Image (cartoon, rainbow, N blue to C red):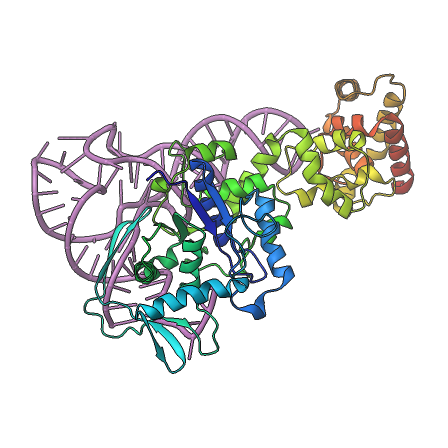
Amino acid sequence: MTAPVRVRFAPSPTGYLHVGGARTALFNWLYARHHGGKFVLRIEDTDRARHSEEAVQVIYDGLRWLGLDWDEGPEIGGDHGPYFQSERHAIYQRYFDQLEAGGHIYNDGGAWRFRFRREVVEVDDLVCGKVAFDFANVEIMPDMTVRRPDGSWIFHFVNVVDDIEMEITHVIRGEDHLSNTPKHIQLYRALGIEPPRFGHIPLILNKDGSKMSKRDQGATINNYLEGGYAPEAVVNYLCLLGWSPKDDTEKLDIAHIVERFDLANVNRKAAVFDLAKCDWLNAQYIQQMPMGRYLELSRPWLEKAGITADDATLEPILALEKMKVTHFHEIADRISFFFTEDYAYDPAAVEKALRKPGALDRLAQLSEIYAALDTFDAATLEAKLKELAATLGIKPAEFIHPARVAVSGRGVGPSLYHMLEVLGKERVLVRVQQTRERFVA
RNA sequence: GACCCUAUCGUCCAGUGGCCUAGGACACUCCCCUUUCACGGGAGUAACACGGGUUCGAAUCCCGUUAGGGUCACCA
């Protein structure tokens, strides 16, 4: 009852971190943090052929990116290692010998099978409640194998042994394991150990109700890492799949979630994954995050695009797009015209704004007024432009659109006056001049 | 096939017998704001799978049906 909580995430190094796995890790982590317990990471690499340094690294990177730090496990250590199944052979042998001595296993053509008792097994699940499995009259069900003829171990066996050895108190895993739980419970009993508590969380499905495969959009954590997402947004979204704070709040910071999270309020229904909502949350996070964090998360994407300005230069430019960006990878393209005088002109925008009769002349007029300005801030620029339009009796838009295309080459972009202010008087005048020369009939 | 889980708007959640002519969010449509694109504000479309009970009263409890999903590997 008062034993400290110890949970674990035990992925197999497949080369990617599935969202379903990530959410399982997240719920384990939340449970540990909420209850002041320990979160253990164990790599289930019994299938040695698949174990590669890169595959394991993908798991570490994904968990770290999401902010799910483990208290025991690879690269951290702990008192219950080693944390790779491939290095725990001697431990498994010991438990195997114990099963054999107790007459719980038998040899079947070289493989070792566990004598499963055909009786009712009850699982008191933290999420699903009491679930009774009735095996009393089940005819066709082979005893599960615990060891292959070549001496290698089977998942169910090593999983249970590791959970015993690592003193796991709560096994929180996907619902696909609920049906396997009776076998695990009997294994615990055969070993003379009281089983831990179980909590089976619902699966994550595709839009069409099928199980998500790694090829689906948003199915692996790498998709988010490379897709311009803020990790805090992804974590928030993942929490909302199967759990809710019960008060209609959608955007929740992690500390708040840790405070409120518990298995009792996790749903039992499988959730369909909706990337559109994840995108929306990401945009919300970007809008509301501090400038420093925004700069930090933008920088890698900007560098990738060859933009390497210092923070002082970058900040005012990035600020122009903060309310408009949904994914970080969009930013570089949106602001690229700030970093070159040789920016491209969008033909459609040119056609629409610069080819209109008198557009180039109006640019010249505007340029003349702006050239005389001592202060070049957004408010002044707006006032002067509107004043000029009013004097000539035409709409401000007749100046605004050509000006936008002249200085950026585009029909869409940041607020014009703020964009001009950030660009600065000198560059604005040069760009207008350059544009007029280029598009003069 | 056997066993198990699940069943509220297209999607994610709220709702644990009366406060529900079912609430919020995403998406979608429309309007407002507006120099573009967005943001923001407002409005709208849209659901208790079906059939039986229990009860004065059921989205909420029980049974059945149907439909999804999962497990029954010498995969993890």
